[in-house]
Length: 511
Image (cartoon, rainbow, N blue to C red):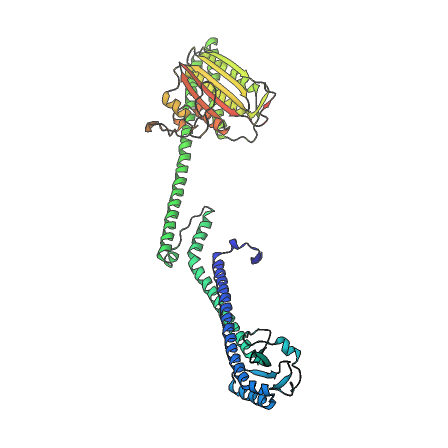
């Protein structure tokens, strides 16, 4: 792209400053040239006026008596003698006429003979002697002066002056001024360009290093560049280098912390898996020992097989929970009412074992445009936790409904309730989300983030260290679905509310 097509605002400063200097020099040169030539013209006009006036006044005094007597030879003599006195005037011709423009005498009688009429071009171009002005398109000036005697015009004098020398002087002065100003303009532009490059070099060095930072590479400015400029630039470069060192140290520390966090997370996951699997595994080993000793008793064998089945299902739940939390699925299926029917079947052994009462209410049918596997896992974890918290003979309640473009799930249970500090941590809105509306829901959960609002430093722990694996994974799944979770405990009833947004066209055949 041509430089002319680029907007001037995008030109580099090393080009704009010399151009500004050149434009200023041109403007100053133009004004200076105009003023000098104008003053020179005034001086030349004034000098020509004074010399021509003196010449005509002296000649008129000399020829007036001869004009009155029509003494042609004395007029010729006066004309010739006056030319010798005014050698500074470049006189081409002098004419003395009568009042009727008949030539009495002329300095060039061969061209302008006596008793002939003055040519028309002389009469047209002649100007009064007190209005002398040199024009660039007229190399000669013709002046006329009346010869007056006792209030009457008895004759005229016409003089033709050659002003080519004055015009040549004007041209010479103009060329000298233009040449000098052009040379100075070029010199100043080059000097301004070099000086600007020198002054802008620190900014270019800083800009190059900042440009490299876009790729995540922060490099310090070398000491050779730092020391080659003034104190202000050295201070700027040193400050930039300090910033780069601080950023690099922070990135290294962040990378180290990230690796440590990954290892810590892996350790927490391993510990949680070991804890959740160890309990049913120990029970299963005890059952196997029982089977070995009482294999011949059908009743004991039947109970032992049932316990083995529940233990395996418990381990399967832990494995499925981990898979749901840490393995991304390429294809996600929609949530169907059958998913919640299966949940009720899965919970039935736990409900019967603890002699609990479950109230079930699903207020929709068909399919919903939301990840069915994740929603099912959320509901299962909440129900398992509620069943455990309710204890033997406790009361459970599960409600699910579609409200507008949202799916609402509410799980309630009787029992001692959630501890106050943990309840506050569950409800802290670290993610900046509004609390879900509805019964027994207070605020959006910060999921597995640290609860920064806790006053007690010892309580500011990651959420997975404060609750069981099921609730921790539930929090992660709710966040992945851009949902909200709230918890509340009062009067021996604990309620956990989950609100999940549906995609556009959320409900399909939902009632």
